[in-house]
Amino acid sequence: MDVNLLVQTVAIYALPVLFAITLHEAAHGYVARYFGDMTAHAQGRISLNPVRHVDIVGTLVVPLAILLLSGGKFLFGWAKPVPVNYSALRKPRRHMAWVAAAGPGANLLMALAWALLLKISLALPGNAFFEAMARAGILVNLVFMFLNLLPILPLDGGHILFALIEKAKGSALSRTTYERASFIGFALVMVVFVFALQNDIGRITGEGFQLDR
Image 1 (spheres, one colour):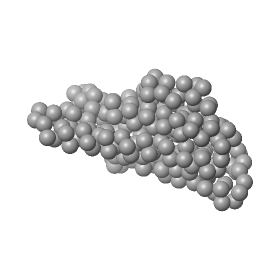
Image 2 (spheres, rainbow, N blue to C red):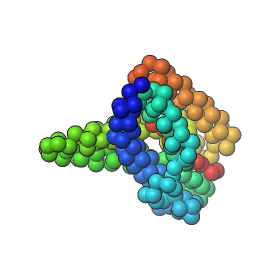
Image 3 (cartoon, rainbow, N blue to C red):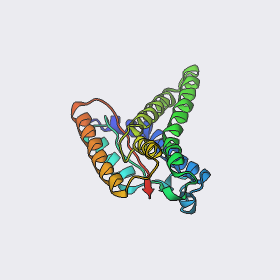
C-alpha cells in the first residue's frame, strides 16, 4: 500500500465528502420543516455544522478502514440519519417524496458548484490540488446522487417510490412493509458494494434518513 497515495486521496476527498454528506442531510431537514415537520429542526439537524451529522462509525471508522483496505481506491460511508416524522407533514404522501428528493437535489447543486470551481482552477496555473479536489467533488456528488436515487429502501429513491405508491393507492403502507423493504434494500446495497470492492469498479458513498411513521 502506498501511504503517500493514501494520504493524498484522503486530503483530496475529505472536504467533498464532508460537504456532500452535510448539505445532503441538511436539505432533508430543511424541506421537512418547510412542509410542517419540525423534528429535525428541534434536534438541531438543519445545520451546515458537519459535527451534527457525523456518525462515528459510518462517517469516520468505516470510510477510513475501507480506504486502508482498498489502498485508497474506494470510499463508502454514511451520515447520521435525519429524523422525519411522516405524520407531521401537511400532505404526507406528497411531501414525503419532496423530502426524500431534497438530498439528491442538494448533491446535484454541489456537483454543479464543484464543476464551476473546476473551470476556474483550470483557467489558473498552479492549482493542481484544487483541480483534483473539484473533480473529486463532482464525482462524489454524482455518485452520491445516483446511488441514493435507486428505488430501494432505505435510500432516498425508495422513499420516493413508496410515497408514490401510497399516493396511488390512497392509503399508507404498514411500518412492517417499510422495515422489510429497508432490510432487503440494505442487503442489496451491501452485495453491490462487496461486488464493486472485489471487482475494482469504482468509489461508492451511501446515506439515508430515518422515517418515523
